[in-house]
Length: 202
Length: 117
Image: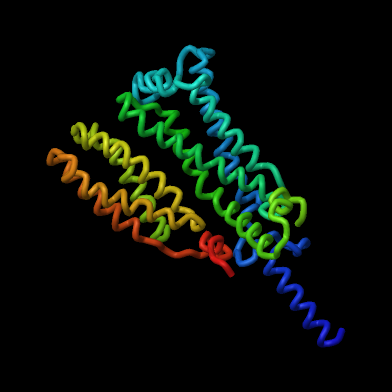
């Protein structure tokens, strides 16, 4: 190998690393990052939280649908019953806990789908994952405010669900950041944003 | 635990305290309503700011802490609620300023998305 070709190889590699999409046999670490946010080690804890949240919300839904006659409340007496039968909980055609369960299900599914380089190979699923945790957390916190302010009651499992929903926000965001940075690089290259978004080229 | 984590955890505990304080200290509206709204918000922002990639969310607790300092004078609190709000507000403000160490690298972070380069 001549010095010239060695140098040009280095240049190509560096450009490719900077662009972050040509490294096919790499470790999946985004350019400028110290770790890969899409590894299972990063994602499984969030998926675990989503599954727990889904189970809690499903249980509360069963009570709201009157399939279960009673509901568990260790601390606040009639609190959970008061909250789950309040007008806020029943203002929609479906019980509010059912919406929560649906949100957790989306989080769990979009957390699992895709390989360990999905910030680059499936940006769309990472973006849905990142966006899904936001509204779920926001609605959960709004309901936590409503409990004492509107109904003078606390609901233990509703509080547990809210804690889970806000715990998922932070760890889901790093992967979304990696995907958005990748999409920005693609657009700056003048390549198709949407093809990259749907993972049609990587 | 590093400095930033201590700051976030203490703010979470203060948020929980705000939610419980109206019952434990026995004060009513408007202070109780305000604290039961602000408490969960402080918990949320402090929790999200525990992760390095979303550390900047700590800033959201700065206006909330300032509001706790201001609210007693605007809304007319009893003395117990006033002292509680001022004390909690002061600590929340100070802790929201703690950035702490960032050990990982994030490709320029969220700022890189709006920078043109």
